[in-house]
Amino acid sequence: MRIDIISCQPDLLESPFSHSILRRAQQKGLVEIHLHDLRKYAINKYGQIDDYAFGGGAGMVMMIEPIDKCISELQAERTYDAIIYMTPDGQTLNQNTVNQFSLLQNILILCGHYKGVDERVRQRFVTHEISIGDYVLSGGELGAAVLADAIIRIIPGVLNDESSALTDSFQDGLLAPPVFTRPADYKGMKVPEILLSGDGPKIEQWRFEQAIERTRQRRPDLLGE
Ligand code: ADE
Image (cartoon, rainbow, N blue to C red; front, top):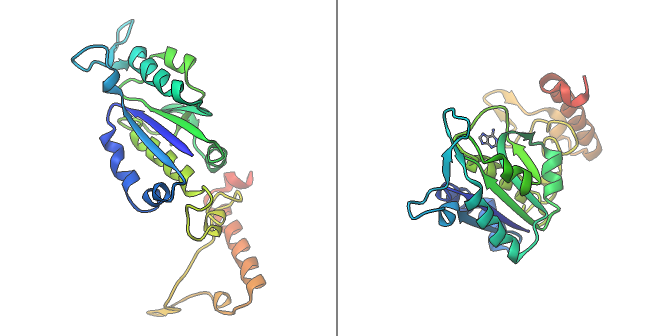
């Protein structure tokens, strides 16, 4: 998979992709991440990429021309399966959408800033509009990092123990059950006996019941309740 990210603050994205799982995924050749600085496509030598909104009002709007130039240059090299605009008024991200994106070859992510992008960018180029939650960030970069992380970690081969992505919260529409590790007794706080029993099927059944119980308590909406 290849992920291109267009941003006017690409430095913000260097760190999340240079550590741990995301770095290893790139080293293993499972994903390529390319950051593009929108200012390189500015309309003048002052690096201008935004302007006042027609009709007035506070806040700057990202102009279509730099974005058009950048996207067109990238599209001349390859076809994108999805051009995703990060925005608080997009569709709220969930595991289902992440799973679908993880099957694509080439993804382009556009990070918004200020009051957002000229609406014509959305009309002309964007295929998906994604929000990472009902709150407003100062830019789309952190949202893009969240989205890319969620996509990359489930690409086969990225996690060492592949089954662990399948047992994540949300993968089966349920929250994950509680987990424990050594010691079995810490200051009198004991691990549930069943997990020490060695009885695989019984443990699976217990985990399933715990997952349902946890989901019912914390996220009844996932059970349609
Ligand atoms: N940009 C600003 N707020 C955002 C959000 N909640 N999700 C995605 N991109 C954003």
